[in-house]
Length: 144
Image (cartoon, rainbow, N blue to C red; front, top):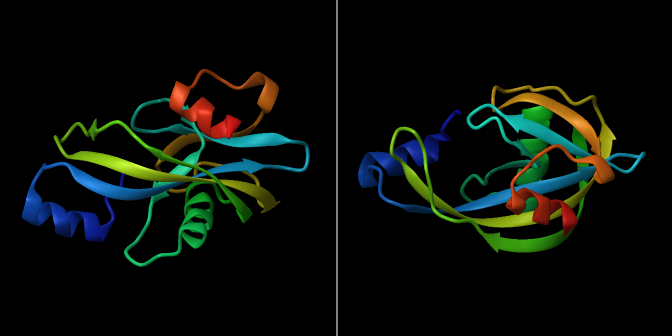
């Protein structure tokens, strides 16, 4: 997974210490009522599309950017539907982070899902009634 430049700069000062990061997740729904999911390259888990905000970036703008970068899908961000705090996570390189995650409901505008930037190995539309296996945290985001 590519590390944003500002995170790499922080890591040069704090090493692998726990970073508190602003994150965004999008529950993107198409005209058929299906949810956009990606299969994460780092864990193989199915998830809604998410990412880290750049410094000073508006959360809705950042989420639309992340969805486009990761899947090639353009969205309209409609509403903030949940604010959660993730459990602390540790990357294989030892970097630790915990996220304040803003979950948004989004509508598909255009584009066909495909893994676009290496963060996902698959991207597709899943019926809400037939989601692939995913973490409880991701299911809660979809339910929100």
